[in-house]
Length: 139
Length: 139
DNA sequence: GTTGAATACTTAGACAGGCTAACTTAGACT
DNA sequence: AGTCTAAGTTAGCCTGTCTAAGTATTCAAC
Image 1 (tube, chains in turn red, purple, cyan, blue):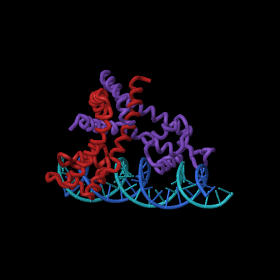
Image 2: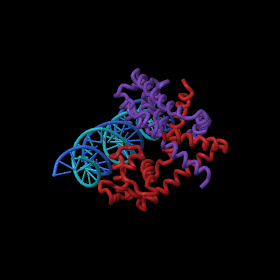
Image 3: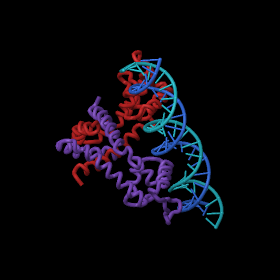
Image 4: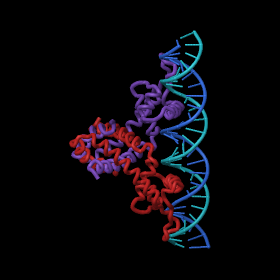
């Protein structure tokens, strides 16, 4: 087995545990992790449906259902694009923005607390690996 | 915002992309990623239901449903513990083992290919960060 | 040694999240 | 005008997850 394959196996295992960790972090929060992710996309500006779907790597009908639920919950509002009547836009409501802030704080605190159990040297190693993880994931 | 919080945000974002990457890796494979994970747990020995549920951080009824489907698909077989008639054990069938091998090869190849797009220096950085990720995730 | 609590698991019912297929409406391009 | 393409939605199906409730077995305590 090549070095890359060994690395692949180990990375895969580590990721599995980290994902389970983050799942526990958001359990009981007032939005699901998917909803949190979508709210995050809407933080700075309104988006069109297809933009959201692509960004979240899901198909358009999936995003439609997701946004339907969030609209019912009062977290987002649909709008229209005056220059193209086919397009629906989505933006945060005040309620949605508040919800986003609350959950973000909780997540950040949870992960930060975990990170603080690491030694400064370990934190440094992790910080340097982040751009690499990023490159790997966005390819 | 503290250094830990910054790190937390960045890590969270990187992980999101990596998870999406791995999801694409198994899309179209003959087992779902959950099934793959369960098959992996059974590789070396039979397990009892509650053991599996705990290991995968799900509740027992969830694992029951999962195993029901895999049993229907012929990937696993239920057995009994002679010393305690309440306990059900689960083990791989020949078919299940074959399926596990196929999917594992595909995953490994996919991730390894991605890893090979990194420079040796980047691979080194990643390799050193793995124990840290592991420590973080298993806490 | 019978009964009562605890343990291991299953079933049922609900919901989120994902997909494909089929439909509607609106633009774009002859 | 007529047709092709694009943007969204609806509907139907599946997986994955939960809680609540039920069954069967073990164990402990009288």
